[in-house]
Image 1 (cartoon, rainbow, N blue to C red):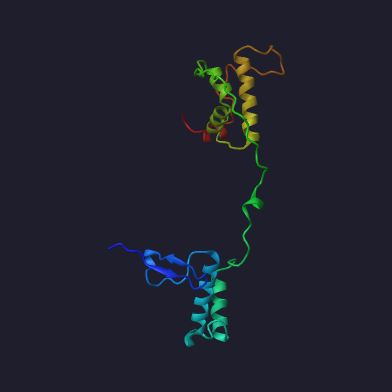
Image 2 (image 1 turned 180 degrees about the vertical axis):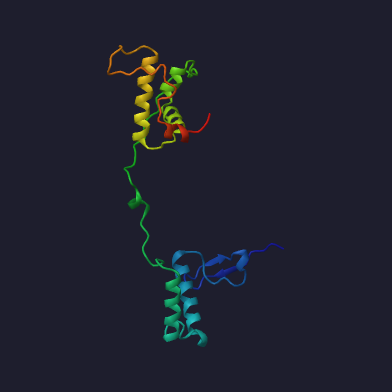
Length: 182
């Protein structure tokens, strides 16, 4: 029993098939002008009822509106369009360039790992010394570099370059005490 009910639009006076959900109640078609007419008609009917006559006027209704606006701040403010929100210009599309990329070999030596991972060095020094400031880490790094050069005999034996080979630690006792154990 799937029959279609037709109706005549009260605005454009054309015959239309009603929506199955509104069968028997639909008086206007889905055209934008007819929808506006339907909205205007239902608003006139609503405000024509005695209980709704002063809904938008009077002291108590003004207070109701004030309370609603207080609970919904910024509701009436205009929203920025997406075009105004853009922080950069739109990019022109580029044709992809096909490149052959050789797979990376994992580094084999400690030097390769250290040079490729500066964050590793900074993190390691930070854990060893307990410092997170760049100035402290830089000073410690210079100390480590000098000691490493001395160990590898990369610098000449000069009084201005101290030799650390026989010392137990190059860090002050306070720093060594707060360093995490490994």
